[in-house]
Length: 616
Image (cartoon, rainbow, N blue to C red; front, side):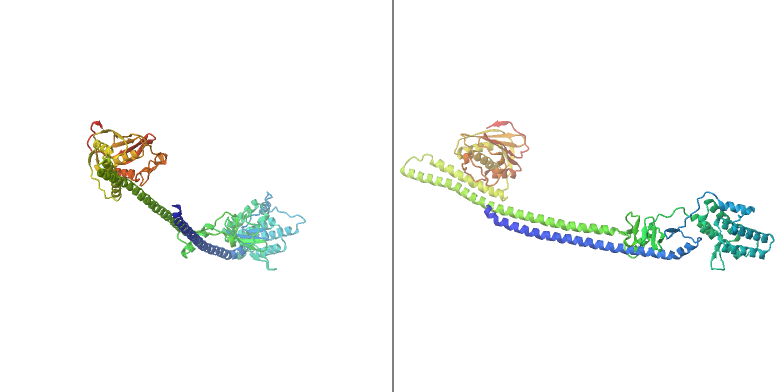
């Protein structure tokens, strides 16, 4: 059979190999499609991230550009507000403004102010400019005491000219000017514009184009010359004077409070635009400096997100963020991330499509293997059926030829003896026996065919088991060539069955027991058990346990002892099981050994109760 199956097997292997190559190629195509789709999604994401990066950079540069005039003004004017601005030149932080106060611990400016007020300030012999300054102050005092506005103005102008010629220490210059201006504001009639300039905006010196700073700017510019106590004292006196002469004081107070003690911890070198994690945008500023402004990064990201949503670049749930925890990030390579559910949905849909296509390929492969296996099995069954058919035809032919030959021989012998007038002995009985065997074989074949084709409809009726056993005994007495002892331990229960089929079932079990038996006599025993069970036991050669189920297959035959051939069609036990199933029952091998075999038949009982047990 293997030789017959080789072409089919080769064709199936070649077909499966070709299908495998095709499916593998399809899988590579699907994988390439997935990678291309991923690359497309990633490209779109990168484009949006680049757009967000450029937009963010442009917003930062525009913000710093709009703040540049304020930066330049705050660099020279200490009264200009510079919150959120940063400026560093020559490695020195100018904005935000540092306190830079003297830490000597005493208060020379405050003490000198007190001495000047008390008229106790004296100059040493080597302090010519300071002695002249004190004399100028005394001239202003005399003009004020004389209530002469013109003299007062000339004395103040002379003092201012002295300030432009001699630069004194701030701890002397500022308290002395403060005392003079306080006295003028309290008692004099100085021009208001002049007073406001001296207190706040300052005056041009009229000589070299220089500028005399007002007290407010002067105190903020010279803050590093004063101790904290001096600075607080002078700030309070200048603020009070400002209120008296009617100049703004709120910005002066605010700038004084904004002074910070320590520089900002920002990168020492800014070679290109940077963004710090603390929220500062910085650009290079020569020489050896930087400029920048403070940012509200969350608000900036929210504004950029809103803009991209309005332009239709982001879904309503999309957002722009700055991932990572780096302290300093270069603006040109800023890691801007664009997050959106569209990416997740796209990735999920992409993976689902790929998995579905892969699953379809697997199912195709499995289907192909299944079809190939079924084709191989069908071909195998076909050839097996042909072999069984051939064996069956040969067996049946042999089984038919043997009794026919015997009948012909016996009939010819009988004719010859009758013609000679000799005794015919038992030839008629032997002819009847051979004809019965032939008839039983034909009946088995016809019954199996009718049941197999579903053309036998059982005629169910109550059947007494003891009557079936009695009929079996009569059949065995005339239909077997060997002595048979049949015993029974059955009750008078009735089975709901077809009597003809049950008779055929028991007859096949009995003839099989006689065929596969080397003992004499052949002993058979039929017994009933609860639950509609019937045990049929013989003393035959037994059935190997591995064959207990296979013996019920069609055309399956066991070898006899010593491998001898046992006559039969191989349909007996198959027919028995089909008869049992046709009645809704079962037939199986309950036990088997060298001492014999027990078959268990289970059939539905009639509703009538069990009757007393009888022994037949």
